[in-house]
Length: 254
Image 1 (cartoon, rainbow, N blue to C red):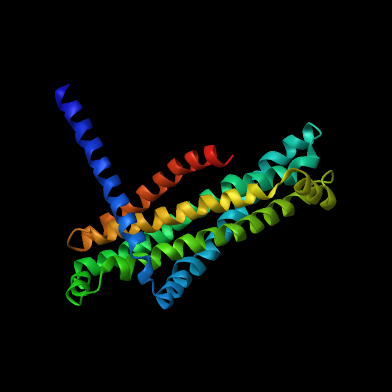
Image 2: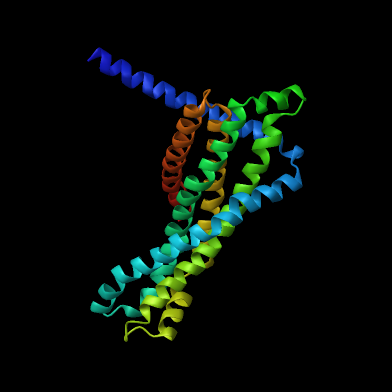
């Protein structure tokens, strides 16, 4: 029993220590925002955001298709087919688009950031930056954090559009749901906050992905195995934090 309690205590301590390290890195990054290099920011926005657009659109399109297939028949059964478009749009704007975009970016962007910085760490390039009086946080972390915070909500906007399009394509197969009915339901049920709330969530998710990825990359153990381990831990931790903060933000925003 004592060994079990000791193991639980050590695990809790490790998680609290990790959380503290993430908070300290975030504070340090915010302090160094004035050193932001616009050219590096634009490069990171293209690499982390634009290059992620195809996989995000593909994921959300099929999500819109599936959720409509699962719900449209039930709504039609109870005579509520006039609400399908609005319900799907609300689900997309509030939850599905920001959360799935965050998860996809955690898998692609978070892994890329960790692998890149981890490789720099094990090849001593980060130490070389310090020798040249270049702060690694200002040079490496700041542009990636700002790029993720900017690009994640932009990707969510595109995700909302493509998800609604996927939903509309499926509704065309149901005779009782017309195009006008689908559009009217969106006008009636959806308010701007349903979309902007999801974009606010996406800003937090982007920050989480960038901070976790940079922290794991900057603290990678030596060797190729260390890079692989850090990349896996980065993706897993980012996804867990995204779902955790999604609960908190949903309660606050809605």
